[in-house]
Length: 376
Image (cartoon, rainbow, N blue to C red):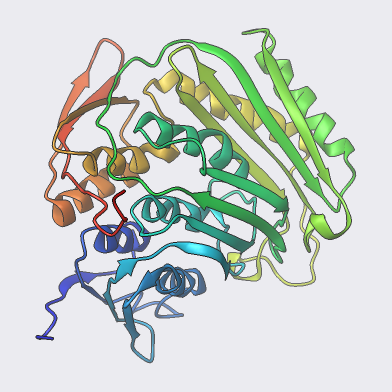
């Protein structure tokens, strides 16, 4: 083994996307200056947890973190996948933070992946697990991922600050993705949703649904929002309630919005022991309905939270042209485009479409093939 040459990066931003792209492109990375001037320097618990998760699903991967956590080296190995894996995501970020990189790596692993993740299932920061199940998994199917073996089971819920939720993710392996031309967003034909409540009265859910439907019923008749009230073991360790909405269009796009209400974690500025005022359920329902209508109004085939994943999937396609339409480009999406250029060498042609206020992106995929998969 010769000396490994590391790609040098600085700062803590977009760490998740960097690690994902480093693994897919087999590029060793060295990240320095991670919150070096902060009150609490170094990697956060969820970032260390993500590194440990990558170690768990790959073979021969090396992670070296320095004592203060402000610098680390990551040499990706071969993504193995595997069954019956278990990972505790901790409580500093929700499970949604870990699902997106996992599902992409699972597609390009050696064996099908099935892993049980423990932690927070719904919070207001990361996409919640319901949204992942109802919108992110169908997004993969657009790129030719088979639907058998691709599922997310929500076994129990966990709200911040103490979590306690569990989900079971299964991802099949594929040879390669298929390029897409996906610029028709269609019209919204139905809205589906699910509300949840843990360790609080189930009446909160009815209030949220009533408020959200009050807005949607003026616009379209087909609105169904289901309730999911958990009690006992399945309710996790903290009280909370929330809602996840998905608008499905005539051309098979899924536009989502979700949120959850719970007591703040200690590191989010909430004082331990003091009771905070929670947002009333009625306001939650109204706000989230407005957020969803905003996302639909912006246009594009995915909502703003899925932009980065969509760009990544296009860049991983075979060497064929993909063409997609998104609403307004968000910062996270733009950062991802830059990282894709740096790691995979794929450049997107970005063309605004002034008549609809959307943006059309075109790229030629990097032609990533799953070489570790046993070819039948």
